[in-house]
Image (tube, rainbow, N blue to C red; front, side):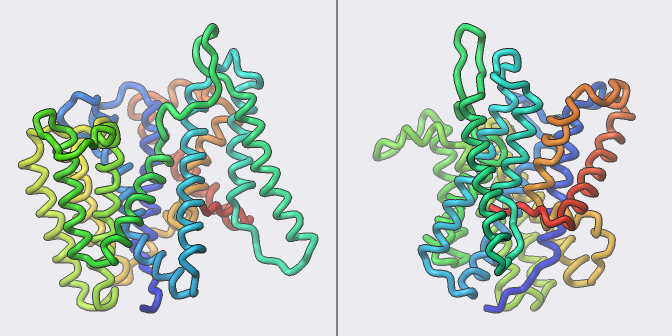
Length: 395
C-alpha cells in the first residue's frame, strides 16, 4: 500500500503536545479551579488535564500502522525493523527515568548543581538523538558521530554525579517510576507487538483489546481467580491500561486505512464515532469497578479517554484532510513534526533559568492561566526555530 501522509494525525499530535506543555505549566499555577488540575488518585472522576496523556498514547497508536507500512515499503528487514522498535523503546525509557530522577534529586547532596545537571542532561539528549543531515563528507560524518558519542558519554557521567534521598540514605539513579516518556515507551512496545500478533487485522486486534480489558478487570479484582499464576501482572495494570489506549489508536488508524485513507470519509468518520460510543457504553458499565482515576489507570478512565479521542479526531480529519482547511493549525506544526524536542524544551529552559526566574504573580489565578497559554505558544515558536536550525529529535 502506498504511503499517505495524514495531516490530521500530525495536527492531532501537535495539539496534544501543545496541551502537554500547557498543562505541565498550568500545574505550577496557584488559585485556579480544580477542573484545571489533575484529579486526586481516589477521586472518582477526571478533568480535561487527565485526558492529555492518554490522547498522546492514542495518537502514538494511530501512527503505528503508517510507520510500519513506510518501513516495509522501504524494504527494511525484520532485524532492522525490530532493532528500531527496541532502540526507540529504550530511548524513551532512558529519557523517562532521567526526567523522573531530575525531579527527585537531592539538590544539596548532588555532586553538581541541579541546573547544571539537568541542562547537561537535556543538551546531551539532543546531541544523542538529533537527526543529523546526510553528508558524504568524511569530516562532517565524523563530527556528527562525535556529537552523538559526546551526548552518550555525558549521560553516563551524569548518572555517577547524581544523588537522591535523605542525607543519611543517599542513592544514585533508580526508576521509582518510568516517567511519562517511559510509560509511552512501554505502551508503544506492547502495542506494536500485539499489532503484529494480530497480523494487522482489525477484527483480531479489536478482540485483543477486549481481552486486555477483561484481563485488566480481572487483575484489579481480588475475587477473580486465574487458572495459572499471573500475580506479577497485578503490578502492571497501568501498562495494560496505557497499552489499551495505544491499541485503540491503532484500531482507529486501521479504520482510516481500509480501502484508502480518503475513500468514503463519511463512512470512516461514522465508524470511528460508533467505536467511541461503544467505548463510552463499556466505560459506563465498568465504572463501578474502580471508578475513574488517571493515577490508578482504571479501566473506565482508559475507555472514556479513548472514546473522547474517537470523537475529537474524526472532526480534525474531516476539517483538515476532507475539507482541506489546515492553515488554522500552522502554529501546531512544530509540535507535530518535532514532538520530543517540543516536550523537553520547557524542562531545558527551566534548568537554565531556574523555576524562580518568573515573578510569583505571573503564576497565580487568571493571569497564571493566560501565562501558561503564552508560555506554551513560546515553546512552539522556539521549537519551530530550532527545527529550522536542524535540531530535530527522533528515537
